Length: 230
Image (cartoon, rainbow, N blue to C red; front, side):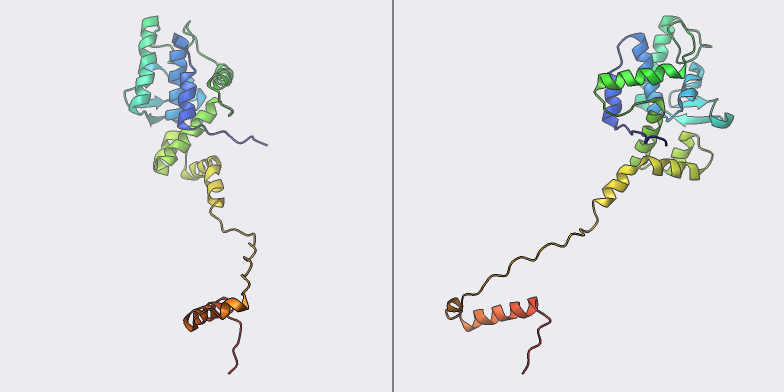
């Protein structure tokens, strides 16, 4: 049985980014987190990117699932984080032909490195949730849905071949909506009726005809089944 994926909030994603170091590897890791989260790429798709695949507002994915290429959008803030790493790469002397996300020696990075890294970053950030690369992709998809983005746009960003896959994907990722809907249901526990106030006969003699009539009308309204005989 597959374990339910933990969806990170935007604040939790920020905490994960803040847990990265200020060293070159930290700048690189921040850029990768942003790509996985904000563009919803799969980890393999991200690690196969070259610097030339990134423009100011988009990323060209060449190694999508089923060998399907696609272009995904990159928001301005995410673009700035990725650009910071690209500039650092140039300072370190990396070649344009080397992978966008590479080791400090310029070698490709295995996916297992980031699976272990995200566990450490989550602990450093104080997150109780299970954090992994695919979880960031899922979190990004949920955030797009929460922002009101069209499901067709989300499907293209995710690289799904049809909308049915995207609908199933998003329905699986949004248990919070089901939980919230259950909170609005009508109560099913029958509440006890409040005890009726006893009437003091002596008090009745002190009431006016108008007050007595009002009490009688209230009694009839509260007891509609009573039939009065002439």
